Image 1 (cartoon, rainbow, N blue to C red):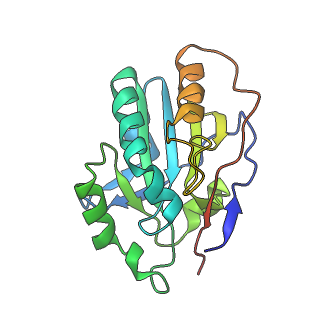
Image 2 (cartoon, helix red, strand yellow):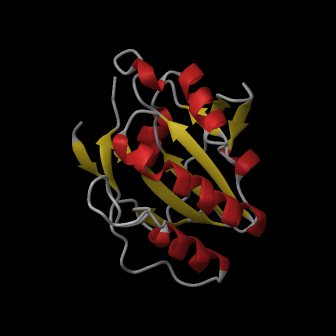
Image 3 (spheres, helix red, strand yellow):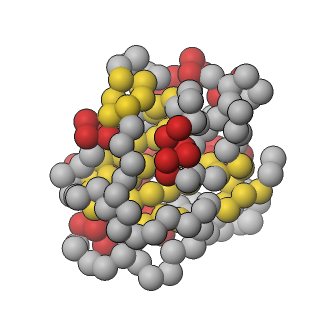
Length: 184
């Protein structure tokens, strides 16, 4: 596991479009299908990364808190499944079903979506406003496996609240830290 920080992603950048298969339903979903009326959260995650496993339940809680407030959510896995078979779509479906993900879990087989977002790690979080302009790119919170800080989702929650309240993007945006995306 290579410890990796998220790359910078400038506020105001328009969310790159995508069209990917949802591993649970088998349907192809694009950004316009899942964007929220007030904002959208795009998360790059995977099945096996201990940093994602550490926060998985909080991802479900955060999404369940904000989905009915006009915020859309999507999770994308872009890992190379030939070298990391635990991230195969059929296993993604198991994880999404077992954890009751309230958001689509999409597979980026070509890795083009991860490249378009300049995603670097899992987990990697992006928040966009109603116009799909970036307002946040950073960590879920300060908790990491083994550091003793409870998983709260506070940084992501503050970023979403800023969108909902039409406030300026958070000034102190700390990068996410996790496993590097497994490139082909």
